[in-house]
Figure 1 (cartoon, rainbow, N blue to C red):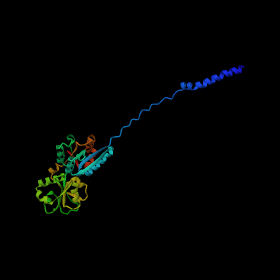
Figure 2: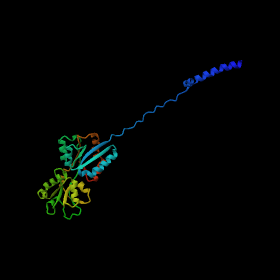
Figure 3: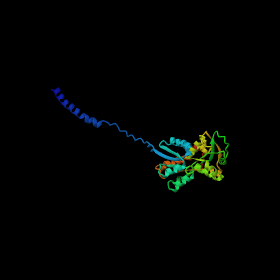
Figure 4: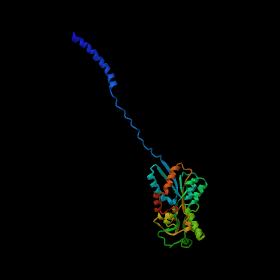
Length: 279
């Protein structure tokens, strides 16, 4: 009888403990502390920018090299360069062609755009200097040694850039006027759309001589320089640069223009025969 009573008493207690066990465990168990992970801070990638650069044809080789350097250092920037005669570029800009930066081979075209209110005046600066020279085919046997020779019977055809739009052509006419040979040379003139076309005419032997910039002559192994324009004419050969008011990327354009006169860019300009303005 005693054993029976003990058994009857113990069983209900065990059942009660089993029912209460989940509650007891839930109340006494220690929860694992939650570790708060701070969000990783990353620098947002720079916004892609396209810069449209309108530049004189004579800057083609040097500026392509400089643009490559700039884009390597600024992965978010894509430079789209448009090379042509400065007068052609002026007309394009006046007609609304997309352009953030203008590099002219003469001050006249930049002056015109500035007067028309199309440039940001405070961004304008003189960037480069160049020289106007006379070139002949590498195998020429005419013995030309000066601009004055263009007025002689030795020369039948001479190529110059169209003075209406090509600065090198304008400088050529100024040199002819100063030397008093304009009347004699004019009937012999063949006009090129830009200075590089003039160079092509000479390279192909289609003309006896041509007037180009010294930097253009350096790009070719098919021509040789035989004369330079008068010193006062060459003193006028200045390349200004400015940012255009129509630019949608003015800050990026300013950074690019600053790079054009940096030590890194200077080394490239000089490699291609330019000198920095004022130097």
